[in-house]
Image 1 (cartoon, rainbow, N blue to C red):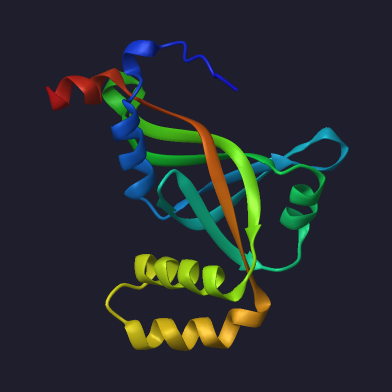
Image 2 (cartoon, one colour; image 1 turned 180 degrees about the vertical axis):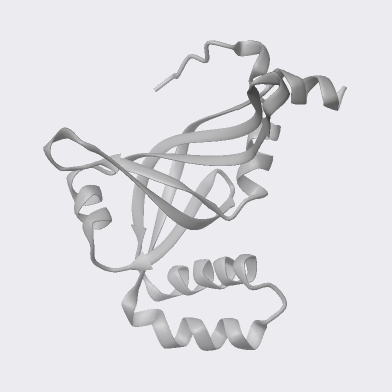
Length: 162
């Protein structure tokens, strides 16, 4: 893949890029759609060990796209603050590229769903178990195994951190 960033001085370190993924719960999954059109869909997720986990229904256009090609891009926007007087935004974002695999097998699926539930509804173990049990047969979890990731932020945010 090896995506080259034009404004290298604004790039985030790998550690800071991972922090963007760890610190958020929604992003945009981009896939190859039909007829050559890209398909980007907002999703909830959690990040762990260079993997992005996404849950959803077992059917739909997203799955049709993945069946055609498992290559994907995932984008998270961490900051997007409009600064009108400077006619700009102070932004921070991260992008990951990789291949998606469908998590199958009840043990791995249950484990990932517990982690996802803990991330999205922390401190409610009973509700987590109830929700997972009630939807286990209807749900599918996707795992984007990241091959490359980059992050970038506005130069103004870099200056603020120093």
